[in-house]
Image (cartoon, rainbow, N blue to C red; front, side, top):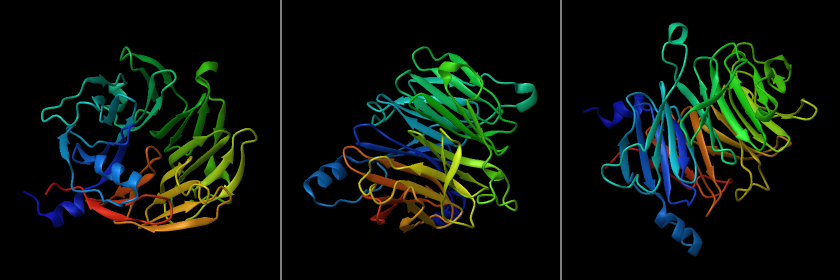
Length: 337
């Protein structure tokens, strides 16, 4: 068995999802495991004003034979993505000792040219019951959760797709090719907008590359980052409106915080190859710089109901926990006691 020191050197947290009722947090890592945390006590004490920290993992699920690169939540399911496969586990059943995936979807892809691609990111459109899978075969595959069938394939990237997000009537993807593509799925398969952040002088960092690792949508706004610096774009005009910190490291996470507590002071989270997480306003002002247990941050999860909680992790056996966007409350280990 590997020592905690060795595990700390080689463990990477890639993904997170929290149940809609706020009772469970799921964390996916490079070993194919999903680590579950029971938030019931935390929620009760947040409501009463008595602080309680996350405790050790409630359960560890051996979910996949390869890394859990992506996770997304629905009302009923905790959905995870790995190499060649998407799986859904019922939130209502994951506490059970022998809980299994309720369903799985095997990727339909060009094996001759791409082998078996990994699922790098998952997005969910609750109004249409669709899951979007950003994959290593340069495509975003769209699946109907009711039938498990692929309904559409979004193409246009010239390299593997890092991230995908669905918001309102729009779907956006970010790729290794340096492109951000924005679709209106109702209007056909051609992207409505194409953005190339690396072509903007204020964002370009040629020594890091043109890849876009992360993006998010909120109303008429899009935030993204990767090799180029993180920036905010207005979708109606396609104008770059804000350049975000930090200026030097590569970016792995860009996320709007919606209505989380503290969101009036900072509406965007930015993180990457730096042991700090930045909370920024839409104007680019840093409202909080939070320390991280991970030298590189790959995943940030922000839940707003029934209480605000932000968790973030990456190249470490720990995740950091905040109950607002202004300070880190505590750190919790992902290892079972």
